[in-house]
Image (cartoon, rainbow, N blue to C red):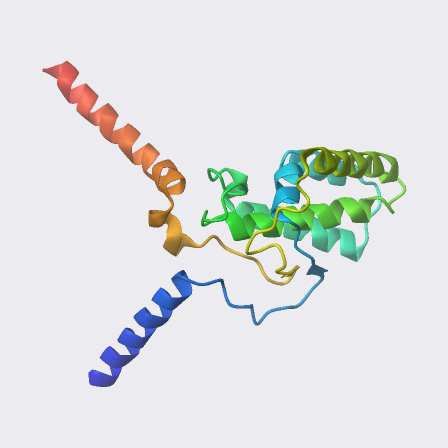
Length: 194
């Protein structure tokens, strides 16, 4: 019984240490390497994420790199709750910041790869130029954060830091909002019936 308690205690200590530091490098660094981007560049790229995916759906040709990048970007976006977490990109403290870096960095690589695909090369080049110009206009390319230098890999998906949700007010409020709305409806119905 004592060894089991000791293992449980060590597991809790390890979980607490993980919650306060950057995520350890994955042991699964397979697939394509995807360089991360500056924090400010992600803020611009976020505005064009849908257009990048729509353009990838219009591509008539395909190759293994294209398929890996497209698949990774879509799945990583799913893991990051489709980018709907509040301030996921803008706030470095968000539990969704690292996974946002991953899917937006994947989208950037997907867009750059499409510039060499004949059926979408022209619109991909135009979109890349527009994004680049917006980054320059906003002066956002130099804004860095903790995940700006961390590479990602198509064989490794990044999940949100769920252990940090309670400490991030915008995320906590968004998570509790549906519960509070349901409670409000229940209480409201009871008041009306009286």
